Length: 100
Image: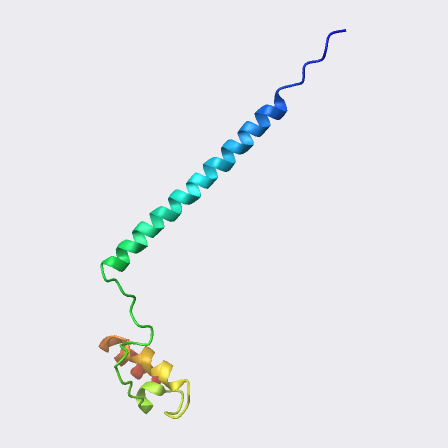
């Protein structure tokens, strides 16, 4: 009897598997290079995200008007006053009108 030839499926499977692994690796490297280029461009241009609590040297004045419904000594009053001061004058007037 003649020797049975093995099917080519395992060889094709290995080639496809390694082609996918190599393609994904190259894609990951190119994505990392792209984001390093983009974020490096932001850093080189002097881009800085705004300070989340306002300007670092800015003193926040806590008044009963902006701290409502908290008292001026309450620790949450600072956050409420910061939100109140970020409103436009029209929005502030509307908020004060609703409180009355």
